[in-house]
Every structure is written in structure tokens, then in C-alpha cells.
Image (cartoon, one colour):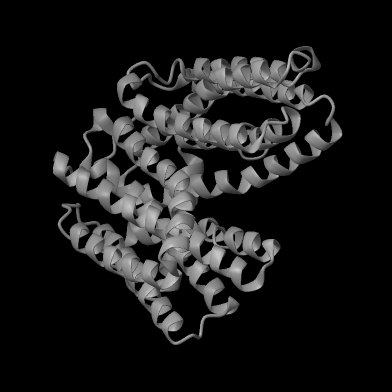
Length: 418
């Protein structure tokens, strides 16, 4: 594989500023989306509207390939700063609406969708910037830190969002986030990022469509990237939905845990993903293209104790033994899945030319996001079909993950081990 010609601006402070900026952007928008959802719940008293709005605000991630095209065509630093300025403008505009007592369901829905769209734009931009400011041999560690930041934001945003909403109210939250977004944008102007703006002529729409076609063609024609995208689809279709749908169902329904143990189980597993992201910096030399399939095989073996924890054989001894066995397998599985994902992303980043990086990464992320809901539906059907034998769909997942590891071994057999 040929290394991408990235211009390097590698200083620790440069990366620290990027991490701080990304943490504020991700956490700030997630916190506001959750707080606004709570406001809607108070306004309407309807849980279905609350859940629907929160879900709709996540849909713009499907537009990330367009954001990837923009990230490759225009100056990434400007885009990164611009997204936080726009977040600040949206937050300030909402504040004015609330101060004028004009807040309603439509306005809040539009604001939440805009926050989601800005977030979908920001992710490909930051992903494309990382290889240019992180040392190549530390790329996995850099991605791991940013992944940990995003995961931690996902855990803390609902908790702090609900807490701040109840303590100071939505108006004061909007004042704080407006100021913080603006300060973050100011910080990001001090990050040294290679200029990548590409001049163009003619219609911008035609240029962007052409760039998107170019990105899709590059992604599908590059052997390693095409194979990695296929494995990513498998992971997001098989294992990711298990944590989204399967884990809550198993803990709450199958094991019958009370609210405290249920929350503890979910929190520990979420923290395991962060641990996996941070551990990759130390274990990056242990994961190679040649043994990538072994990590997938290890993940498949970890599903066997999870299946056992759902079986009548163990459940007859009570909740606690099953819960402990479940966590003993789910914790390393969550960490392993995170490390596998970051390793794959880092390898793609390392070999992709700078002028294709935003498009390639956003295409991979969007396709992975699209396959996950299908997996979630299939898990729902499987759990409903085997509600008294939940270990059956878990064992099927084990088999499919094992087959995915065999596929990975076959696909990567001709790829250089670097």
C-alpha cells in the first residue's frame, strides 16, 4: 500500500486543541439536543414525540458523504471553525426565540435537525484533518482518543443535559452553549492545518456531484478500502446492533435486572468502549492486517459466554451469576469491537490521499450507519421469535462473526502487513 501524501503539522498542542474543539462540539450539540427533547416532553407530555424528535435529529448523518465532498474541496480548518460558529448562531437564535416566548414544536424540531446536520458535517472534516496533524505511527492512538471523547460525550450528554435542564433551565443552557461554541471556534482558529482548498469553475453543484462520484469510484476501486468497507458493513450489521438492541433487552427482560443494576450494566459497557479506544494506543502494534481476522474470531468466541448467560441452565441459579458472566464477556467484546473499528479507520486514513480523505471516510461511515438499522430490526425479530431461547440469536451472531473473520482472512491475505 502506498502512503498518502499528507502535509504534516505534528505538534502535541495542535492535536490537544483539536481534541478540545471536537469534545466541545460533540458534547455541546448532544447536550442541547437532549435538553430540547426534554423541553418537548414537558411541552407535550408525549414520550413518542420526545423519542421521534431525538431520533430525527440523528438522521442527517446519512448526508455525511456530501459533507465529505465539501471537506475535500474546501479549506478544512475554515469548515471546522465555521461549524462551531454556526452552532453558536443556532444556539443564540434559539435563545432569542425562547426569550420572546415563541418556542414551539416546529422551531425546536428545525433546530435539532440543524444541530444534527452540523454534527454530520463536522465529523468528516475532523476525520480528514487527523492524519495531517498526528504522527503516522500514532494514528491509531489519535483516533482512539477522539473516539473516546465521542463515546464519553454520548454517555455524559444525557446525564448532564437532564441535570442542567432541571437546575438552570433551557434559556440559561443556551446562553452557556452560545458562549462556549464561540470560544471553541476561536480556539480552533489557532490549530495549524494544511490548506486543501481546490479551485473550481462552473456550477458548484455540478462540481460537488462530480467529486462525490469520484469519491465513490475511488472507494470501490481501491482494493484495501473496498475490503475494509465490506468488513465494516459486516461489523455494523452483526455486532453493533447487538449492543444497541440486544444488550438492553438481555439485561432488562431476559435477566430481569432492577433499574440500578440495569443502569450499572449499560454504564460499564459504555465505559468499556472508551477503555478500548484508549487501550489501542498501547496495543496498536499487536493488531496487524495479517492477524486482523484473529481479533474478529476472538470477538466471536466472547459471544459464547453471553449466550450461556441467557440460557435456562445458568438462569436457574439466579440473576447475579448470569449478570456477572454477561459482563465478563460483554466488557472485552465492547472494547475489542472499538479497537477493531479504530484500527480499520486508521489504516484507511493512512493510505488515502488527502484530496480523497473526507469523501472516503464519510462514504464508509454513511454506509455503515445505513446497515445498522437493518441489523437492529433483525435482532428485534429474532428476539421476538426466540424470546424464551434468547441464546439462539446470540449463537447465530457468534457463527456470523466467525464467518466474518474467515472472510477477513481471505480478503486481506494479499495485503501488505503494514
